[in-house]
Amino acid sequence: MVISVSVNPANVTTYHAENISAVSRIQSTDRYVELKADINRNGIKDPLLVRCEKGRIYVECGEERTFIARELGIKSVSAIVYDTGGGVIPKAWIDTGKFLKTIADIEACFSRTEYEETTHETCSECGTDLGEETHTVMVPTLKMILDYVASGVACLN
Image 1 (tube, one colour):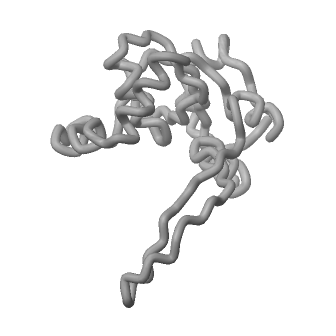
Image 2 (image 1 turned 180 degrees about the horizontal axis):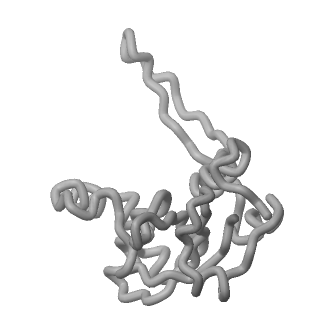
Protein backbone atom coordinates (compact mmCIF):
# COMPACT_ATOMS: atom_id res chain seq x y z
CA MET A 1 0.00 0.00 0.00
CA VAL A 2 1.06 3.56 -0.71
CA ILE A 3 -0.37 6.37 1.45
CA SER A 4 -0.05 10.15 1.49
CA VAL A 5 0.35 11.38 5.09
CA SER A 6 1.64 14.32 7.16
CA VAL A 7 4.74 13.86 9.29
CA ASN A 8 6.56 16.00 11.83
CA PRO A 9 10.12 16.40 10.47
CA ALA A 10 11.46 16.28 14.02
CA ASN A 11 10.22 12.69 14.27
CA VAL A 12 11.90 11.24 11.19
CA THR A 13 15.35 9.70 10.94
CA THR A 14 17.70 10.67 8.12
CA TYR A 15 20.59 8.57 6.85
CA HIS A 16 23.10 11.23 7.86
CA ALA A 17 21.55 11.85 11.29
CA GLU A 18 24.51 10.36 13.16
CA ASN A 19 27.20 11.88 10.92
CA ILE A 20 27.53 15.54 11.91
CA SER A 21 30.29 16.28 9.36
CA ALA A 22 28.14 14.90 6.50
CA VAL A 23 25.20 17.03 7.63
CA SER A 24 27.46 20.11 7.81
CA ARG A 25 28.73 19.43 4.27
CA ILE A 26 25.16 19.10 2.97
CA GLN A 27 24.04 22.28 4.73
CA SER A 28 26.95 24.36 3.44
CA THR A 29 26.29 23.82 -0.28
CA ASP A 30 24.89 26.59 -2.47
CA ARG A 31 22.09 24.25 -3.54
CA TYR A 32 21.03 23.77 0.10
CA VAL A 33 21.09 27.51 0.81
CA GLU A 34 18.98 28.20 -2.32
CA LEU A 35 16.52 25.42 -1.44
CA LYS A 36 16.20 26.75 2.11
CA ALA A 37 15.44 30.25 0.84
CA ASP A 38 12.84 28.85 -1.57
CA ILE A 39 11.19 26.77 1.16
CA ASN A 40 11.19 29.77 3.50
CA ARG A 41 9.33 31.78 0.82
CA ASN A 42 7.09 29.11 -0.70
CA GLY A 43 6.95 26.16 1.69
CA ILE A 44 7.79 22.55 0.87
CA LYS A 45 6.14 21.79 -2.47
CA ASP A 46 6.76 18.07 -2.85
CA PRO A 47 6.36 15.20 -0.38
CA LEU A 48 9.13 13.28 1.30
CA LEU A 49 9.36 9.55 0.65
CA VAL A 50 9.47 7.67 3.95
CA ARG A 51 9.34 4.10 5.16
CA CYS A 52 8.55 2.69 8.58
CA GLU A 53 10.77 0.14 10.21
CA LYS A 54 10.92 -1.08 13.81
CA GLY A 55 8.81 1.81 15.07
CA ARG A 56 10.88 4.53 13.37
CA ILE A 57 10.24 6.65 10.30
CA TYR A 58 13.13 6.84 7.84
CA VAL A 59 13.49 9.39 5.04
CA GLU A 60 14.36 7.66 1.77
CA CYS A 61 14.15 10.76 -0.41
CA GLY A 62 13.96 14.33 0.85
CA GLU A 63 16.72 14.51 3.44
CA GLU A 64 17.61 18.12 2.61
CA ARG A 65 13.95 19.16 2.87
CA THR A 66 13.77 17.40 6.25
CA PHE A 67 16.82 19.29 7.58
CA ILE A 68 15.42 22.58 6.29
CA ALA A 69 11.97 21.96 7.77
CA ARG A 70 13.60 21.37 11.16
CA GLU A 71 15.70 24.53 10.87
CA LEU A 72 12.69 26.63 9.90
CA GLY A 73 10.48 25.15 12.61
CA ILE A 74 8.01 23.57 10.18
CA LYS A 75 5.93 21.10 12.20
CA SER A 76 4.17 19.18 9.42
CA VAL A 77 5.25 18.11 5.94
CA SER A 78 3.60 15.95 3.34
CA ALA A 79 5.07 12.48 2.87
CA ILE A 80 4.43 9.36 0.87
CA VAL A 81 4.85 6.17 2.86
CA TYR A 82 4.78 2.70 1.41
CA ASP A 83 4.36 -0.76 2.89
CA THR A 84 6.38 -3.63 1.50
CA GLY A 85 4.00 -6.12 3.06
CA GLY A 86 5.34 -6.10 6.59
CA GLY A 87 2.36 -4.19 7.98
CA VAL A 88 4.56 -1.59 9.67
CA ILE A 89 2.64 1.54 8.68
CA PRO A 90 1.14 3.02 11.86
CA LYS A 91 -2.60 2.46 12.20
CA ALA A 92 -3.16 6.22 12.65
CA TRP A 93 -1.74 6.80 9.15
CA ILE A 94 -3.87 4.03 7.70
CA ASP A 95 -6.93 5.59 9.35
CA THR A 96 -6.20 9.21 8.35
CA GLY A 97 -3.93 9.02 5.29
CA LYS A 98 -5.01 9.14 1.67
CA PHE A 99 -4.53 5.82 -0.13
CA LEU A 100 -2.81 6.27 -3.47
CA LYS A 101 -4.26 3.65 -5.79
CA THR A 102 -2.94 4.72 -9.19
CA ILE A 103 0.13 6.32 -10.72
CA ALA A 104 -2.02 9.42 -11.34
CA ASP A 105 -2.81 9.56 -7.60
CA ILE A 106 0.92 9.53 -6.83
CA GLU A 107 1.75 12.16 -9.46
CA ALA A 108 -1.01 14.43 -8.10
CA CYS A 109 0.94 14.72 -4.80
CA PHE A 110 3.71 16.63 -6.59
CA SER A 111 3.80 20.27 -7.68
CA ARG A 112 5.60 19.13 -10.84
CA THR A 113 6.69 15.79 -12.23
CA GLU A 114 9.69 16.98 -14.26
CA TYR A 115 12.18 19.80 -14.27
CA GLU A 116 15.01 21.12 -16.44
CA GLU A 117 18.52 20.22 -15.30
CA THR A 118 21.62 21.78 -16.84
CA THR A 119 24.90 19.92 -16.71
CA HIS A 120 28.33 21.17 -17.67
CA GLU A 121 30.44 18.60 -19.48
CA THR A 122 34.23 18.39 -19.66
CA CYS A 123 36.13 15.69 -21.54
CA SER A 124 37.60 13.34 -18.95
CA GLU A 125 40.62 12.53 -21.15
CA CYS A 126 41.76 15.93 -22.37
CA GLY A 127 39.84 18.41 -20.23
CA THR A 128 38.21 20.10 -23.23
CA ASP A 129 35.12 22.11 -22.32
CA LEU A 130 32.19 20.39 -24.02
CA GLY A 131 29.67 23.03 -22.94
CA GLU A 132 26.35 22.81 -21.18
CA GLU A 133 23.43 20.51 -21.88
CA THR A 134 19.90 20.82 -20.59
CA HIS A 135 17.88 17.69 -19.90
CA THR A 136 14.35 17.13 -18.68
CA VAL A 137 14.44 14.82 -15.66
CA MET A 138 11.81 13.38 -13.35
CA VAL A 139 11.57 14.71 -9.79
CA PRO A 140 13.76 12.27 -7.77
CA THR A 141 11.18 11.46 -5.06
CA LEU A 142 8.56 10.72 -7.71
CA LYS A 143 10.99 8.60 -9.72
CA MET A 144 11.91 6.57 -6.66
CA ILE A 145 8.33 5.73 -5.63
CA LEU A 146 7.35 4.93 -9.23
CA ASP A 147 10.38 2.62 -9.50
CA TYR A 148 9.29 0.90 -6.26
CA VAL A 149 5.78 0.42 -7.66
CA ALA A 150 7.10 -0.89 -11.00
CA SER A 151 9.42 -3.36 -9.29
CA GLY A 152 6.77 -4.58 -6.85
CA VAL A 153 8.53 -3.23 -3.74
CA ALA A 154 5.51 -0.97 -3.14
CA CYS A 155 2.06 -2.15 -4.11
CA LEU A 156 -0.87 0.01 -5.13
CA ASN A 157 -4.24 -1.15 -3.81
